[in-house]
Amino acid sequence: MATNKKASEWEEAKKKCKLNAEILMMAKEMDLNPRSLIKNIPNKSEQWKAPVSVWIQDIYEERQAKSNKKRALKEQKTNEKI
Image (cartoon, rainbow, N blue to C red; front, side, top):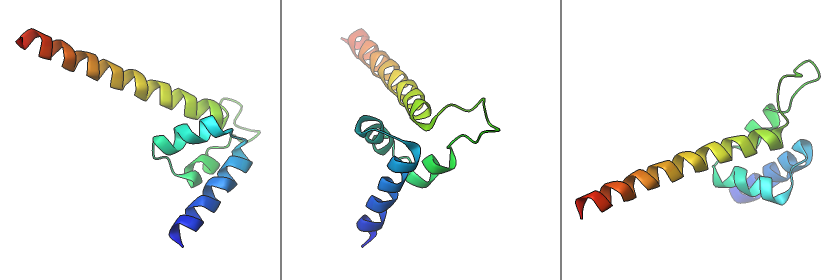
């Protein structure tokens, strides 16, 4: 029952935020809440706010860059020990 509710929330977020499957996958991979995506839809008075799809892509890229940096540092430390 809970998974059915969660699936319907994701469908609602996909429809309201105009997200494609790739962006939706990114949001799920980052464990974002579908309700938070709906809350971040820019209003007409919020011209400065990026669309939800752009916002998700930016967050995803930042997290990937941070993850890659950590991985590179870990490999560098491992190589120094050898």
